[in-house]
Amino acid sequence: MAETSDSMVATDAWTNLRRAALGITLFTGFTGLVYEVAWHRYLANILGSQARAAAIILAVFLGGLSVGYWIFGRISRDRSGSTLVSICGWIELGIGLWALLFPVLYSFTWHYVGVLTPGGGWSLLVDALLAIALIGVPTVLMGGTLPLLTQGLAADLADASPFHARVYAINTGGAFIGCLVAGFVLLPFFGLTTAVYSGAVINLLAGVLLLVIARRLPEERPALGLKKIDDDTAGRHISVRRGMVISLFAGFYSITLQVVLMRIVGLSLGSSEYAFSMIVAAFVLMLALGAWRIGGSRSFVVPVWINQAILTATALLLYLSIPFWPYYSHVIRILFSSVEPAFWPYYGIVFAVLCVVLAVPVGAMGSTMPLLFGAVKNRFAELGDIVGRLYAVNTLGCVLGALIGGYLLLYHYDLDEVFRICLLLMALTVILAAPWSQVGFSQRACSVLSTVLLGGAVFGLADWDHNVLSAGLFRQRTATETSLAGPQTAYSSRADRSTLVDYDDGPNTSVAIRDANLAQVLLDRLFPDGGAVARSIIVNGKSDGETSPTDMATMRLSGHLP
Image 1: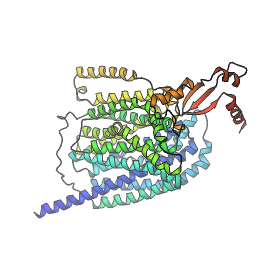
Image 2: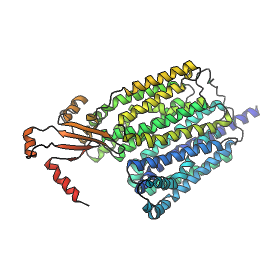
Image 3: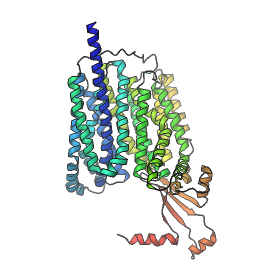
Image 4: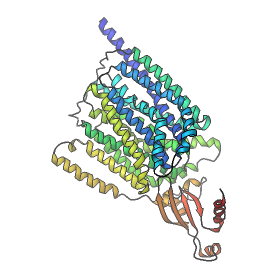
């Protein structure tokens, strides 16, 4: 009886220490996003603010995470729980110390290295090396949280999947809070240096607390009595190799789709730092909720292929809804005046709508990795290693998504075409995860045929209407007679004023060329020499210039300014 009582006390103590460690991951996730936003602003001063520089910074940040996942996944093997939590504590101390030194390192780079950046083909390499030198070390360290804590604090193999999902969800939830606080509070009101120092203090405290937890953590893990799900009979088991391919695709389409949606939000709401922060925050929040609800619940666990099928179907609906975004953004905008007190309610409603729209597809993305981990794992001693490998490949996919999907592809394809590439990759993950695609030649042949048919179906989807995307309805901040008449009427009223001549989405901007539909009498008055049209260039939904004499005067004047 006394032994049972002692065992219960030890279990309670171990559970409380584990909860404390989970709570700390909320704050480390918070600092991770604060650093990402702040470091992006810092490095943009050296590398530039164009799409290429943004892609380099994001790729280095995610690449560091990928390396960290892989390294610390290997380190997690054959070590006790207290040792792994202790390593995690030292990692947080290292991140905090680097953040304290970052302004000094940045100042040195700005004064002595940044001015030496060469032009031509070497500039890409130099930019990447500078970014690696400034943020490479802390991002590698950030990759230690998931593999170390999953291996160090999971009670047994049955507990590993739900516990890992909670670590992932809570850490991602902290990232959501960090994105909003950084974008709306820390940077606008306190500046970059204070934002980085605030994160440093949090990381240092987190490191100390994790070291304390590690010292008090018992060597023997308690038995929590969780019922093990038979992965093979449930059709859930996936080989490590196949799981890594799914993980790679998941990383690629998640970042690529996030970039596409950022651009769509910019065309619907107008480009601003607040629009950027909102789409990132909504994306990260839905990832966290998806991991918590689907991946972390013992009563609601679905096979990976079903989750991916839900993702593909709802992402298709999201694709079909995009042409309506500019109109309904305009409807929300006209409900608020342009006074300062209306700022927070307006962006609050826009954020809530974004969360509702993205809830299912992005939530399914958030559940992919925890579910995949549950389907791939097979030995308790290798939990951290499996986490490290899966997330390293997933983050590598994110790097490729940032560089290729969110940048290089946009030199050759429009936003809707890049979205369709994401849909195809999502459909491929359904086939890869499906039980029938993993056994037998005939089943695999059917999977190949299904892939071909899916590709044809995806690329057969209708293009987005470029008249809609270039309409710039966000510039109309008060109601007009067509504002509440429905999207077709609102779009037609603007399209009738001009004719779309050309349209192209690039890595930085979406550009449209339009000819005004003016009466011949007015054209003769504007262009007495004849043979001219009132042609305008629309950049991200806003007119940047026009050939009519009324605008040409200011354009000529701007050409003389230094």
